[in-house]
Length: 248
Image 1 (cartoon, rainbow, N blue to C red):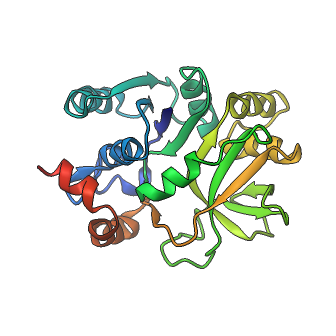
Image 2: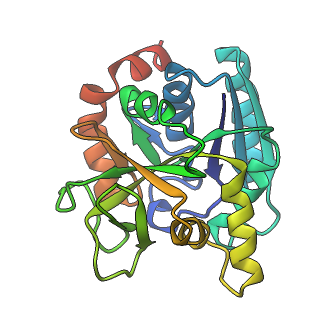
Image 3: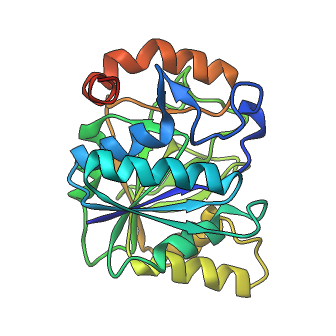
């Protein structure tokens, strides 16, 4: 299966640490490399990376990484990386013939979380989102998190950064079908900004957005210096194999 990794944004809150968010190191390893290694460990055989800010540097790194890891890594560049992330999703999805694992370049995941998510595919859904029910998790920045409200069957009813009622947090990993990119396009046509959450809400309104509860699996959104410091502390415990292989 393919993976699409969104790595186009500016990452202003990490700019003091690194000029490129996806190339920001955690324990000496760029986050984009950790993400690709974890995707491979979960069974991914091809990776599409959507680039934008400092695209030349990111793409040069990916070319070398593809050789080191012996995996196909295809960069897709968006010319305006300041626009909402749904446009990056559509650009990446256009290079995938079928379903794909969608990840954010600044999120770290345990392998088993991704493996569990990849096992959830069903014709009854167009997307499955990994969610964490631990909404008071101290690793989650409440001012930046994307919140999720679900029904009794675990289907998404509402998603967004500003929704008032929620029972889970979006982990930033999705098992997506072509229907997700189509839904983002529909949201744009309807006057929405084109965020990934806009497309997710379209599918939620149709009962086609499901969830995968991660339980105690570990993940982090590394979006600012505080989160980066925590990642440096916690990643060796939760991602030992990926870090060990990368640091050889």
